[in-house]
Length: 228
Ligand code: ADP
Ligand code: NI
Image 1 (spheres, protein in one colour):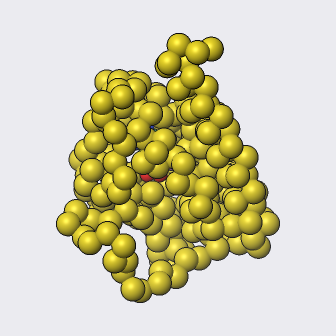
Image 2 (cartoon, helix red, strand yellow):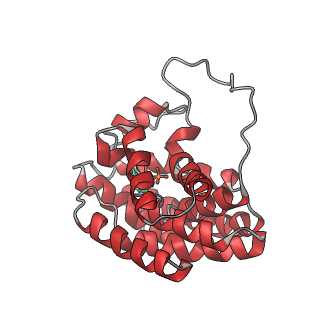
């Protein structure tokens, strides 16, 4: 099977799988991440084929589809790639990306002392950096705002509640189970993304999107207080 055929088949597989999902993951998010990741990959001189395949598959392995089971997601991606008869080293490179991309993995586990980070420095491939930055950028700016409220609406979360303060150091467990208002998510995740970019282009885009998030929040609280 040639590369183009592998990409096309994977695209159809992802479209079909996401259409069966109801957690708010959608094909257009994958479409945007795929295009942005390819653009970043080009700037970073990363392997575009690996980046495109990993971007297409990055939400298939999402833990939310598997009641929190992160391993099951990776197994699903691996199973699909194996069916395409591609080399096992390529499969390893792609599942490495899809299993490590999530923002949640950057959060401390429950009970871990804050500030005490794992001393081992993770080795990140250029391909992982390109797909991760693209995925995080899609959670920022105007689109990120739309996605946050869509997510909150789907899970019946209020828009905002002044009595419920955002968590200052949210853990992995809390991130998975939080029922906090959607505005809190801006402080618990979205505003942190700017400083988590791995690539030059990612940082440049994140800066602009971050400014827009702040502008939005400023207006939101102005209106909340009745000042238009
Ligand atoms: P990631 O792919 O980085 O793990 P998620 O799958 O957790 O991101 O989130 C998918 C989308 O839903 C993102 O746009 C994210 O910002 C949004 N989202 C996730 N958790 C919440 C939440 N508690 N409230 C509002 N939006 C959320
Ligand atoms: Ni995603």
